[in-house]
Image (cartoon, rainbow, N blue to C red; front, side):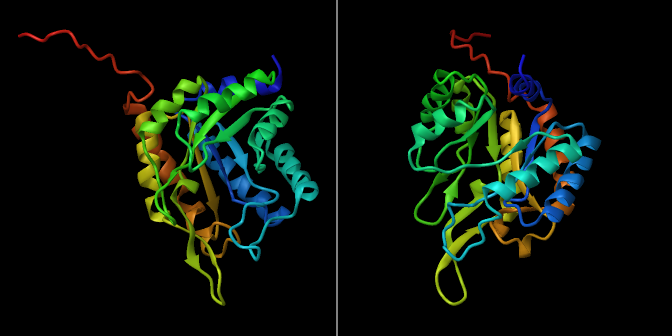
Length: 270
């Protein structure tokens, strides 16, 4: 069994869930290494499998003035250092308007592909998206709920999507930070707009997700979110990561969310 298939099996079997976490974007090598060390320390203490996340190029910024990261070449070198230094798997993101071509190209790497549901898509679309990866010869796929557009500057999370996305027959991940973005909802000094967010609701969405029984939690984390160059309003403070994870693990362990409820529709009588 290759390393990607082995890792996917480990994530599938994670109890009560696995965690994808890290700062939104690589700000510097020193910062990313410090964040990885601290998050790894927390998850090791709690016994949670960790996949470290950060982006090398945020090409989908609302404003052209926004920080994008160090770029692919330098960014991948930094992420490789994180992987080697702390022996943790890494996930990063890519963006492309031609979605099928992107999925097929990603599938051909043989790596685990975590597909995020578009904010404009129905959850049923993810069945087809996952199948595109498999038909390209890669069985290593996960699907991720990240909210649905609700008007111009807001997203909502429909917990039914966590259940419906299981029909893709692969691990389901809840992105509890991006799903609380308010796209183009924050005015910038000097003109223009950027994405805002509802950080205070991250525990609410995360509690809901683990109660429903998702396989993984995706959470962007920062040690100084008020000064984070990208998506500061939806990054969870590093100082509260352990506290929140402890609560989520407790909820997940008492919930039967991963088990399908057997509904008996035969006539009832005493």
